[in-house]
Image (cartoon, rainbow, N blue to C red; front, side):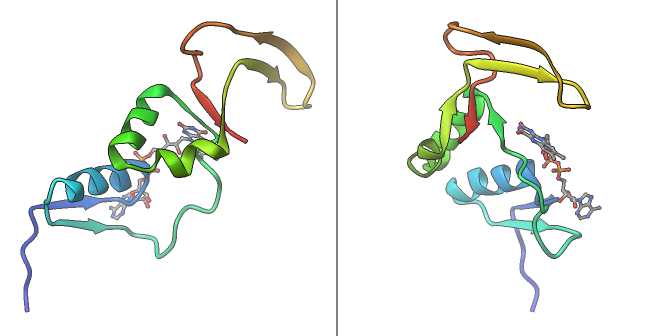
Amino acid sequence: MSKTYDVAIVGYGPTGMTLASLLGQQGHDVLVLERYPSLYNLPRAACFDDEIMRTFQKLGVTAEVEPGTLVQRRYEWVNARATRWSRFTTTTRPPPAGRRST
Ligand SMILES: Cc1cc2nc3c(=O)[nH]c(=O)nc-3n(C[C@H](O)[C@H](O)[C@H](O)COP(=O)(O)OP(=O)(O)OC[C@H]3O[C@@H](n4cnc5c(N)ncnc54)[C@H](O)[C@@H]3O)c2cc1C
C-alpha cells in the first residue's frame, strides 16, 4: 500500500529534525529519510543562540531545555595544548554566544 506525504526531508540532523517538527506541528504529513540507523554519537548542542531558543519556544520544549543551560557570559580560548590564550567576560544583552549546556 502506498502513502503520499506533503513533504519529504532528506537527513535527520538538527535541520531535518527541526523542520520535520515545525511542519508536523502545522499539520503537514512529513516523511524523513536518514541514511544512518541511529543519531550522531557526539553532543552537538553545547552552545546555541537566542534564535535557536525562539525555535525551541515554537516547538514547546523550553521547559525541558532551559534547566540544562546557562547564559554564556565568560569566554575562554585555548589552543590545541589546552593552554589558555584569551579570556573575557561580557555584560552585553543578549550575550553574543547565547546559552551553553551545563
Ligand atoms: C562535535 C560537534 C559539536 C558541535 N557543537 C555545536 C554546538 O555546540 N552548537 C552549534 O550550534 N553547532 C554545533 N555543531 C555544528 C552542528 O552540529 C551543525 O551545524 C549541524 O549538525 C548542521 O545540521 P544539519 O541538519 O544541517 O546537517 P547534519 O548534522 O550534517 O545532518 C545531515 C543529515 O543528513 C543525512 N544525510 C546526508 N545525505 C543523505 C542522503 N543522501 N540520504 C539520507 N540521509 C542523508 C546525514 O546522515 C545527517 O544525519 C557541532 C558539530 C560537531 C561535529
